[in-house]
Image 1: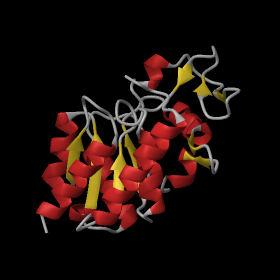
Image 2: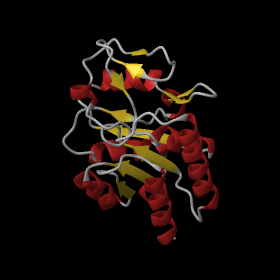
Image 3: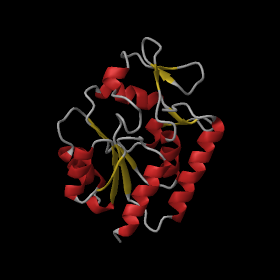
Image 4: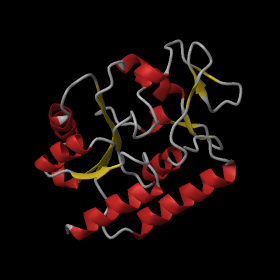
Length: 197
């Protein structure tokens, strides 16, 4: 897994994500993202050694209390930035067992080094991060807070079982269990939305 993209790779992924959004026949009213194995390639509560989290000297990378890097999948920051620039709300929908750790990393993680845009800057207050066996309650709470029909939501998650839960409510889901959030996953989600006009 390539985690830290070069500046050129980041800009290329962001350009491809922007183009996909601009050319889409239909855009979601909100995008929901899982965190573990969707935005970053691990379970945060088992990969990281815990707080305090801080920014590494490069001003972009987040490290835990032992200096271990906490990085996102290489294209995830570019995809999230492009979705945000398109004016589409982004909502975290996570079952992580350590919500304070997730929030700390979200607060520190820089998505766009050139502008200083952070993960926290793009997340909706409708986000739900808490332990659970299922995400049905998460999804219902998010839908209620956003006041949008389930059919207008696009949800990225790494677990097929959770994706099926979303689909049972009418949410458009993309399973990213082998790749994490990337431009191809965004394209797949936009194609799914367009096919269900």
